[in-house]
Length: 262
Image (cartoon, rainbow, N blue to C red; front, side):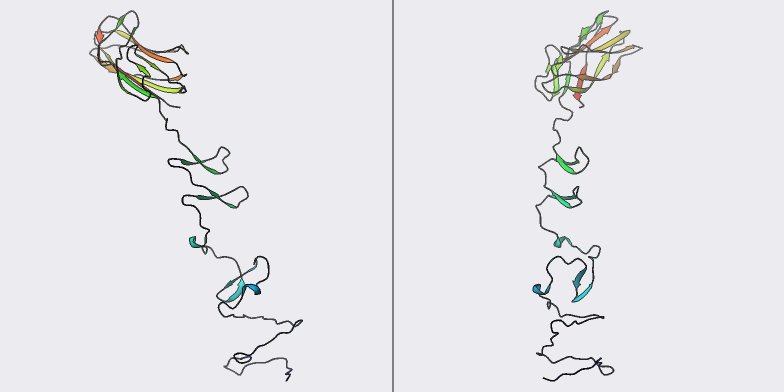
């Protein structure tokens, strides 16, 4: 075996230096060190899995056959490189800062922040928003009480969310079981020109004793008024409407409505 000892081997000017021919093997023996200060290029697919050190590669990446100082470039991770998931799932950051998967919700659920304001969650929106509701009217005249209150005749239900909640024989609305809360209540009332000072009373009965009044002084000509009230009601409470006027003149066209706000 021949041995060549020299401090430097350089190619002729304008040429490349080739070490060995195809099929030859160049060996760096154990204990010797091969130092590359420039760039060493490897053919594609030349670095096998067995030649990669155990553990994660943290300081470098391999790209285009060249070992370079590394980090993943901005916008370099494509959707195709992400782990497949379930259709409809959502990714968010957990307390640890790690990406976390939120499984998809069910039909009609809405995405909201949890009570601790730390993570998103799916919530079911109550289908009972603004229910129960009712709308009733009169198809007959109601007598104005002369110096006394007279219950308004409301003998026809136009709409109601809970069947039977408005009684057309007693002209009262009853809050259904489990539906206590704050209600918006209103109505339209015909005020004949013959009435002087008048009052419309909304009375809460059974579990409560609140009375709300609307009063005014009739001017010239017939009027239609639309007072409104907001009232806290409990399940089982009843509502009824009454008229008070300066004479016994009758009137028609009255109607009342209401719905739960919250």
